[in-house]
Image (cartoon, rainbow, N blue to C red):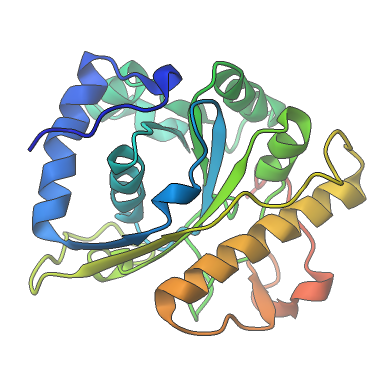
Length: 258
């Protein structure tokens, strides 16, 4: 299966990246059904920040396939530990993925490296929740502030994505062997650029929290389309282990100290 053409020149993949995607992309399309919508909402050539819910260890494959199908090759913020795994770490480094040290002393470096990729015009993918959702209802949780800070500083388009279905292939938290039969449907909806124009260039905590909540609301809207349900009026806060009204949801730090 031929890979789709790259429409964003800054994402042009090297040999290792192309080989990896060349293997995973056709396999994903064969082993699961894709029910993907909203590719037309991805911006033209230039930087973009893709923000998505995180429900499974398999959903990066689904989101990556969607982006590649629409000409954008993703650069992920990935746990630093993955870069120490034999072969996996080498491929991640060679393909331009961005390591995140969640326990490190300098959370700002995470944003610095992501900003550098955006400054080069790349497609950067972030999970604002920072981890797979712990919400018992499997909706997006409260978000961390990293995506909002990047968006307000760089002014790049922020594109929300909602997924539903990858959790049927792999569990929510545990790394399980993929359940591929019967064949599962991977639903994904991509929305339009999150409206943040009134907050651009502002770095005060209130603005960052407002931007974070707008981003999470936009992701909620796409998840609702994928699930065919209305989102709940509240949001799960992992720190409190409880649901809180969205009107008072507060954003978490860039890197969770836990």
